[in-house]
Amino acid sequence: METVSIATSAGYELSTLRQAVIKLLEPLGGLSAYISRGDRVLLKPNMLSAKEPDKAVTTHPALVRVVAELVREAGGIVLIGDSPGIGRFLRVADKCGIFEAARASGAALVEFSEAVELRGNGTFRSIRLARPYYEADKIINLPKLKTHEMMTMTCAVKNLFGAVVGAEKAGWHLKAGSSRQLFARLLLEIYQLKKPALNIVDAVNAMEGNGPGNGDPIKLGLLIAGANPVAVDVIAGRLAGIPADLLYIEREAVSMGLPGALAEDIVLCGIPVDTIPETRFRLPTGLDVQFGLPPFLAKALKSHLTLYPAADREKCVLCGICRDACPPGAITIQNSALSVDNARCIRCWCCRELCPHDAMLIRRGMLLRALMLLSGTKSDQDSSSSAPSGISR
Ligand code: SF4
Ligand code: SF4
Image 1 (tube, rainbow, N blue to C red):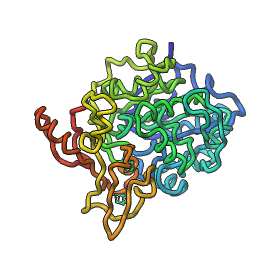
Image 2 (cartoon, rainbow, N blue to C red):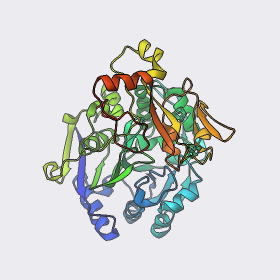
Image 3 (cartoon, rainbow, N blue to C red):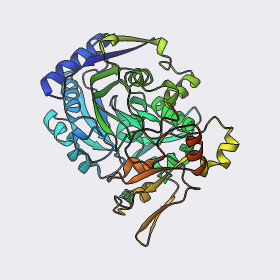
């Protein structure tokens, strides 16, 4: 059985949050159950991009600071590191408040730039992870609970993808990103190469809608913790009200037989779940739609049946960030216009995730629009941050 603890925190005020984290960890044996004196402990927050804390894109700096202080008090040496999806590490750290959290707590910031090659035992035989991540004695994973265009939800398991250094992430999107199942497997194999000692989820202010970069903050007032990130994600998904069949990492963890993948194998502690108000996150618009077609037919009809990205001419400033990040190089900018080669596009939605101007729309293929009309599904509009299509729920 895997244990997951839940606690409430009204907000990010430091002393309130500190008490909430202590309460959260109490039923798990306290922080000392995970950290020994002298350990080099790497905190791995979500530092996706240079956004202010109230945008809920990154792990809140107050949580990073509180955990860093508690680890130091337990005798650990604290490092805080990540490899942002977009932007220079120090700029991201500064903007999202983690630079100041590190300074105030006496922790060292480490940029993930150098990687070590590791041998995998599963589908992926060689995976390179950031050296400071791999060489730390203990990892404390500090994910933000958010919706995710490709995987529906990003939380503890997905946050560890940040251990892949910089542009190597795009390479993995290219290798594994054409299938959600394969990408979920990659994430689970990354987690198994270097397991975090503890996961503490920032769900005080989470994100719904078009996460992980352009969604809307939603106040849950919750912290979730456990040693097993798969189990933590199962509970986070239930608390967000996301249907389990859309949680691709959970589904793949079940098929791999990983501990913590089945809700019935998880023991909950902390506050009683029935005291938590029911929530149902708005889902991203980028969720794929297959109508249960056999793969060969879905592939043949890809451009007509699926959603695809297209720039909003009003909002797009032609900065080129999406083009540079697009794993298969499907985006070009020529003569002051951005275009996407739909045949090359693997629907990883990195462009939407990374666009600082929320300018990458989702369009629906012709056949998909027709099917939606026939099935009476409303909303035949392109969308950047509106409600989910609803068709895949
Ligand atoms: S869509 Fe966004 S990231 Fe891409 S060029 Fe336009 S503004 Fe830049
Ligand atoms: S165009 Fe966007 S969704 Fe398509 S492959 Fe490139 S980054 Fe991914």
